[in-house]
Image 1: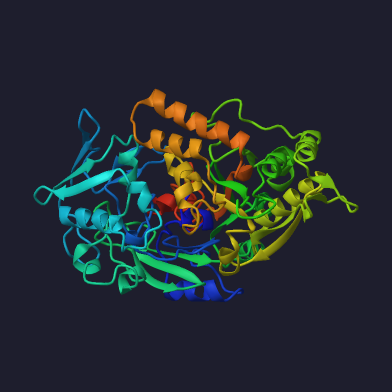
Image 2: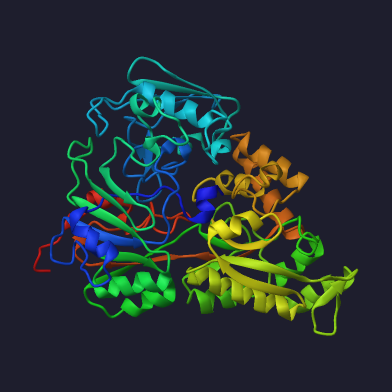
Length: 535
């Protein structure tokens, strides 16, 4: 779980109208670019914006960046397909070498040719310790990358890392531009140039990302010529703007999406996800650092009620980062709601009820703050439900809303209602979420979780391509989280999107935790085709 995955600021996407959407993004009474029947323009509402638009700093690392392409990409079924590469890689028998043949005739949006040297530059820069990329450990297995001529790239690994091909959806940056700037602060971080189907035209921070179609895109010029992502952090405001015509589509929580159920001009798209909500339980707090408290809270929480009442059924209980319907889920690690069992754990650990019902041990009250992101109704509702369940066990949880600027400095000792989740290989989420050495590394391992058995299993899981050994490793991780939970996982959330019914070609993928930035029905917007204007 990277900094961006937890904050929901994974790679943003897509293309936007500059003049037509200025009013739509800033004037609540305006109309969305597509609402006048112009099917070649659209505006959608998202909850978060990226920190940077540079692949060297993490943008586009999971695919769907739209400004850029990776060597490979995920199709609608989350299977790898060629992108800048002409085919899936040739992999050596020992799993240590991956060879990619590159697509010829591809240019960056400034007209300069793409070649193997851009691939080498991108990967080597990401691995450079001077580069502020919070996801560098995702490429820990990479020993070397080299160009063989203009159209071949060879990756050499330190160990046989089974999901390496999935890492090569990483967006490729142009060496001729990015190499001439400070990688962390240069203009490329906000004014990028890529090979993708869309070109950035404007980034008004806190307001919108605007893009236009790339007319020379190697995959064919998109039919949707202008696309804007309006950054609207408040769920209620996003729904209001969609209803008023400011937006053509938006990601919404279940209760707000339900309000559009009977609107014949709109369609609702549901995407299954790996997106979870969890409560971090920092080991540096004198209450949440007690394993007994963490174990008690893990069974005091009523996950099924959260799914039924908060998500209105659009999700499932979460017992860890791996969804229960994933083939990687360790059967038997489900935790049933057991309030009596939670009270017994606390009693036996010396946490005795005080006069007001809040437990006390050695003069320390069982209480702690729980922060959630302001404007995010799902997080707020999860936080309030968690606090209610904890109170029944004798633990006082004080919920507080705030911005990430307020929350981040407090994460070492204060609990946070966080989110994360990445489809595919279990290494993608679990390593960054649980590896002890990453405690305090931005939004990685926010709970400062420290479990030597888990550390070893995480290393075992990523250092072999033997499926039996890998399953054993990740089973170990999940079973350790039952014994010593560093987080209270609550729910896995299905994402709901409401979109004006004026285009064909919309679909959804299995999604990560990114709040409609690189996912949603617009994950393949470059393939949308406008419907007849009369419709």
